[in-house]
Amino acid sequence: MLTEIAARVGTKRALNVTAVPQAMVHAARREFGGWPNAIEAAGLDYSAIRLTRANWTKPELVAMIRAGAKSGRIGVGPRGFISQKQATAAHRHFGSLRAAIAAAGLDADRLLRWKRRRVSELREKVEQLARARPTMTPTEFHYHPLARALRERFGSVRAALQLWNVRQWPVAVNPTVEPRAARGFWTANRVLEAIRERHRRGEPLSSKQAPERLTTAAKTYLGSWRAAIERAGLDYDEIRIGPAHGPTVIAKTGHGWKRTYVLQELRRLQREGRIRITSSSLNASGYTGLVTACLKHFGSFVRARRVARIPEPRKPSPPFKVARMDIILAITARVRDKLPVNAGAMPAVIVRAGQREFGRWDDALSAAGIDATIARRLGAKGR
Image 1: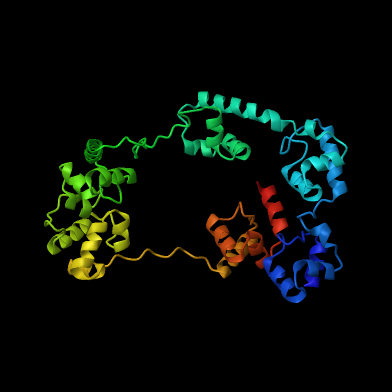
Image 2: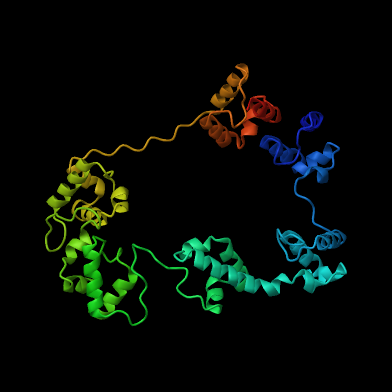
């Protein structure tokens, strides 16, 4: 282990824990109790090698605050006089950011003035965005940088919009779901109209697929979802048992599927070839009633498929896997042909296999006896 560390120092290769092969890190943990102990056993300073710096001290934070104040910036963040990490460290050491600024001999009100004027700026930006994109939905606005600023300042987007009396924006529109009705909107007639409208549009009407607010209103004003469906002039058994978005023209008894009709439907789906004849695929495609009927009449779905003389679907073939030795042979073959072996020049399937088997592509190169730094340099020259 120490010899390998000295060899990497001689070739000026990186020694931080993320740059060395993971096999070396694991060996260092077994032999020395950790990678930092192995570095120190080799006579090196780990604090100069590690990428993550140590915590800032109070004098360092004071010096950074004074240097940031001289730049003329105010506030905290990428455009402020200090970064958010530095502000967090100052809060940890001094109790608050204002105390840290006072310790630096500066005016906290001047450097943090953005907190008082930020509200008006945010409101102006919200109004500009509402004028520029009047049809923006809540989902689109959720991922907008302005929404994050509102959440940080007011706790939620809704609180900020209510404070500024911004209504009807963002627009809550979903073409596949009816708008949420206000309290007192539903009546028995409106429930029946909504059911008939969904039936005209060909949308599912089973109790599990219809909007919850519609089924709740149906139970409130008409007693049950079944009574509402029948009052709307529809066949509840066909809606409850038949596939929601598949063919519904199939003979049924008054109590559900017949045994012969179950076999007919399975054979029809097998002839179409759009769905794998398995219980999981049929459930995912909306044929839950058919699967339930198979269990009721035949005891299991596999037995129903066997009675219908439908062969068992083939299982999906497992993904192609490249062995470690094949990866190493592919690397050495390209080196022998004087071709670049950096990740950008190698075939994508080989690179993904190397990352899966070795953890990183650099580790795959090291396993093949290739220096990753030299490989990247040669690949850059080739481009």
